[in-house]
Length: 241
Image 1 (cartoon, rainbow, N blue to C red):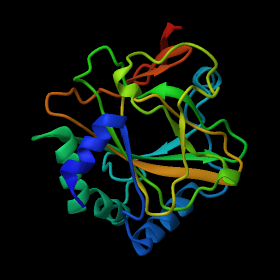
Image 2: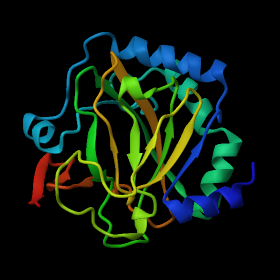
Image 3: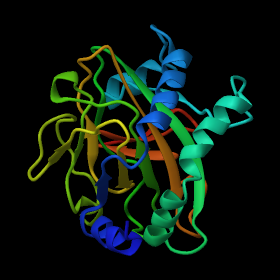
Image 4: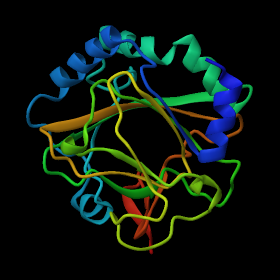
């Protein structure tokens, strides 16, 4: 693996896909842990207005956060194995530069028949130097028949604001990613992306977010959708688009 070469590819497209990055044994252990945590019928945590307007139906879990009431040191240590992988650390540094910072990890779970995630940017794009990096790990294979696939517009991290329009429509030059178990997907926070509706029994991925030096810790507090801007800390729509 050549981190510098991969970093150049990332900055050209605004995303990077590396299959079989993590071993089948490790992701299998984490996959079982995630299934055990969520069970068969987890409930949404976001308020009704967000779910209806955003068409982003995910249930979050923060397994490495000791301040959460459901934190388990044993489970946290298992997820630490992914985040501390030296190849991932080196690749992150090649992309973000020196003194980058981890933000938090979040497992994003979606139930069957839900909308997935509509087109969005993880943070406002007005300042190109301020962004987050999504480091998405997939612990099971997603096929087209399952839904839950990742859709990106290559190079859109340089295009500014996600345009208004239908929240789930196909966009010109979009690319559909079907991750396999062990796949790592790196995604710039300004890149236009979505997740297709869920057709299988469930869908989840684990996101180890990071950011460059000097980026505020709350960089992902405001998310940009095609029909609104939403602030998570206050649970409010701050702009209707």
